[in-house]
Length: 388
Image (cartoon, rainbow, N blue to C red):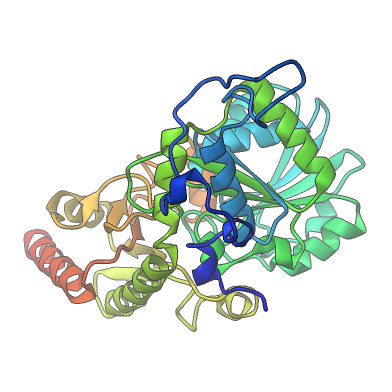
């Protein structure tokens, strides 16, 4: 019987018949740079921690299991993982990328990948016809779904059919949903990207990134690149991500429950002009999400009536923290214009719908009524000050 993802967060099936590491329930931190050998040609399986480390290897097996992949690779950050991903391509290659991506990804593509003569077509992958942008040089389609921060939903299986028809790779950044709610490899993706800093870690206390695949040739390339560049995740950070994954299921369920309650509350506020959350039936991607995911996640974006109103919210929140990042147990509110998407040119931000009155919420696991009470108080104070 296929194990549930809740169980996979806690148990790696292949290790269950083994009493290794002195029976330790929590996988040990192998804080070592190098490994001794008994003789020439006799190895413990590990040589040098830049190549591989037992703690990192265990984490990679867990993440591969969660994403139903064959191989996973753990990196020092999400951006380190995406930077490594770009090493699959050579000058002259063409990539079709969604226009509404995390600002760090856009910054990397525009300032590093394009400098290395990789070409990009940035399009709305959930609304535009991807086939219209395919050229003989096109090698891959790169998407997030839902997107950051405008929560656009792309049909992964439909894009996979197009990619396979034209011999292209499909890469999906699955950070917002986590493997608990969505498994892109099962829908035809070739590579899945995660910022492990976010939901996998879940506690805003470490950085990590992952690439997961079910293609042996791609895995072989990643294994060579990670040992060559030294971008692998440290043993201690690997331990922290392993610890975070143990509570992934319960965190995601609670955070999603809270997100829906907050989205419904925001819809009733006179100063809110738009609420964007895939769990709302009116969201354009709601039915696609029901088809390709097991939930709707805990990220939501909303727009208020003015820049002044948005800035006032950011200044007045206390329990909800005005901070970058997402996916932790604490609720965070982010201002994409000056934070996550500050390096994205204004014309691109505006085209994607990001304005100076756009706010993004990463909903945590606090009591939902406490979160709504704080928002209600902040809204009321702002409305009085601005005479709304």
